[in-house]
Length: 184
Image 1 (cartoon, one colour):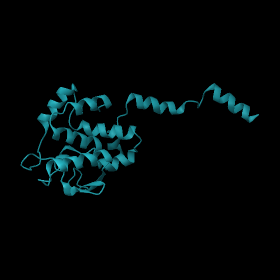
Image 2 (spheres, helix red, strand yellow; image 1 turned 30 degrees about the vertical axis):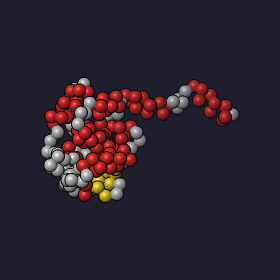
Image 3 (tube, helix red, strand yellow; image 1 turned 90 degrees about the horizontal axis):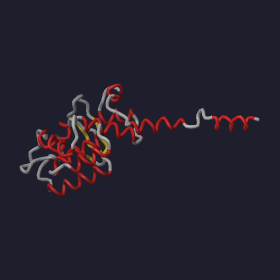
Image 4 (tube, one colour; image 1 turned 135 degrees about the vertical axis):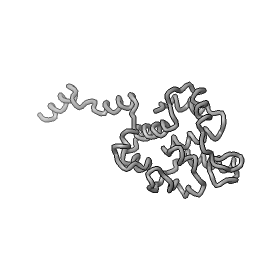
């Protein structure tokens, strides 16, 4: 999982537009590599991406947030809809792989031991840390079980600390004294 600083470095290290666009898409959707690379304009309807070719062979819908809607609008203007694919080369062919550009981007960002699939984990972790539920995440990721989804949501130490601080006052002497006085 990338923290916010690593995400910023990763995006800044992108020297070509399509690599950055693909990374931003995964960070906003949690889509798998092949789902993103095969994404067509016709897969988008309203505020959702409708996937029919998934790893689990089950259709799923992924909401498009405002940042992603703006990105897709910019891509559309840039490529002038010369292809049915969102992410394509100059001849309109879908990218089959982005391994080389992704590795180069990681190198420039000074991020080690990170794979493309880890972007999906990064999406999942930040989704939960920003208030999304595990059930919502399960549906967005297309997992059949909540157990699988739990493997994706890695919480930062800072987030765990904030969560534990929700219990502040539960057992504090000050809180107990106030309660005892009210009971009298």
